[in-house]
Length: 223
Image 1 (cartoon, helix red, strand yellow):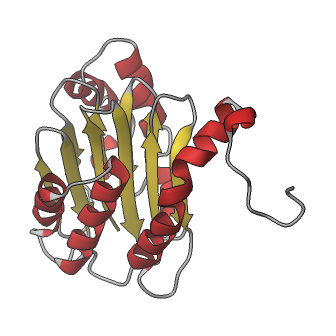
Image 2 (image 1 turned 120 degrees about the vertical axis):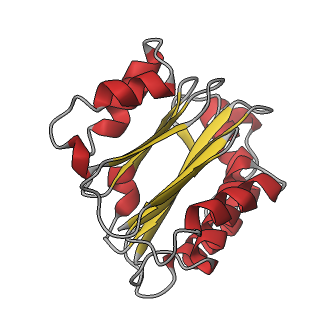
């Protein structure tokens, strides 16, 4: 019931993920990241434990492939679809044999895409190709991949939620945007939210690290 992408930016060291689904609040359950470690996604009858567990295993020294192999020992793993990426090793995708509907995935050097209950098996490859062809920040490239996946057919039915997550040098995500329920086109709504947030991103980081260096908040009452 989901299509998603996980990725890294070798230039900046950032990790990120983006996801959309017919279910509400998909990002709250399915995509995770960690500064200096990587990103992970768990989808298709989601077990929200799997993303943090993948990150724990990679933080402990396992490669993405080793981490996902270890997670295949978990109960009911045949129902899950998993992805993991770290800073240097190839990203990896696992799809259990009980996953739902039309299934597909695509793996590149710095990103992996996967989906279930898809309109077309071409969706993940369209996402990966868009990501690899795009310029700009990691968040921008993730969003362009999601838009390409939707244009390629997306999920079999209408999607209603979407999310974008990026980790940089901080312990907290520098981008964590979600559309938890939108009647129509949450991916486009999320992209619109990203374009509002994009020019303010660095200011929010500066405010956290050193409020003295922060620009004016630009709100009533701020002198």
